[in-house]
Amino acid sequence: MKKLRQLLNLFTLYLPVLLMGLLAMATYWLVRSSPAAPKPEVAHAIQHQSDYFMRQFAVRTYDASGRLKSEVKGTQVRHFPDSDTLEIDQAQIRSFNEQNRLTTASAEQAITNSDASEVQLIGHAQVQRAASVDSQGNKLASLKFQGEFLHAFMNTERVLSHKPVQLTRGQDQFTADSMEFDNLQRVISLKGRVRGMLTPGMQP
Image (tube, rainbow, N blue to C red):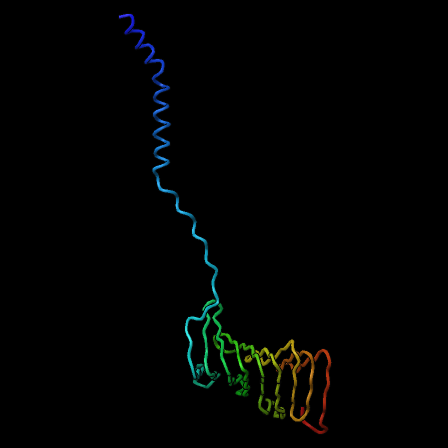
């Protein structure tokens, strides 16, 4: 009876230690058996890839009154959804401003926004405004810009280039290393090596 009491005392004394050991083993087994936490997905960088293309295309846009606003043609066009831009091969663009004055543009390749109001022309680039008459009845000579790169803003009638350009106004000709032209403000800035040939008696 005395030995039994001693065994019970020992069992009572070491029972918490045994329970803690069993709990530790059970916890270790659960950790080993549980599936690993999913790794966070790495965000994929948005790639500049076209989502559609067309060959031998022509796209026209009209204003609310049905008047032709612009026409874009080319041998192939690719649309890039990440920037909502179009890349056009052998591009030909016509654009009419609010006064219905026509501006045309062409290049080996063009990069435009969705409505062709902003166009980057690359390779044998050319922008031309036809001769016209302003609201006061003054004659406006034709304008033509040529170069390997031209950045044209069709609605605001601005043409920029950081590369050599040639400007022809009527029969006057200018060349420069870079240019900024604002037709609405009647301001042109030619930079770098500027050369010009003026024809007497020509209208501005």
